[in-house]
Image (cartoon, rainbow, N blue to C red; front, side, top):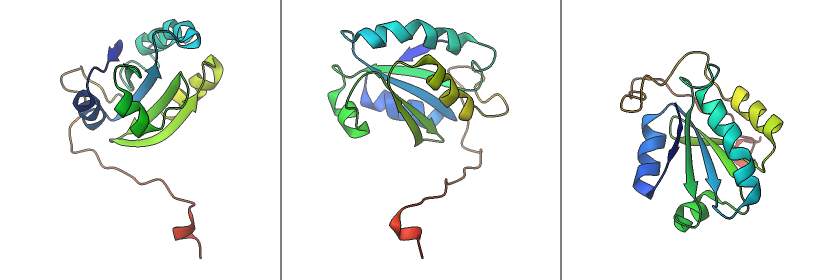
Length: 138
């Protein structure tokens, strides 16, 4: 696996729709911390622990400002985890131990990525995370 570069909003939408779990890195080419953590992310994308379970992707916030705004990016790097097309987690900053914990927390038990053209199909069941907002309180 590798870290895939997202060039368009439609490519982003396709990526999160076709892959069971996606780690998305919102970065900027001028961002020092982004440059510092990029080699570690690339290493994790190739590791046995994650390579067939998490699809690693990134996008340049300066090239896709609308996507950055839609996702609520306020600083770089910001990482998002998508499961079955839904944003389930995010993390701000270039902190390798904390990011590794985020990856481990969101790694499925079994392989979900066969290759980049057949990431997942639509037959996988989905689950909704419990909400703690006011609408669910009694």
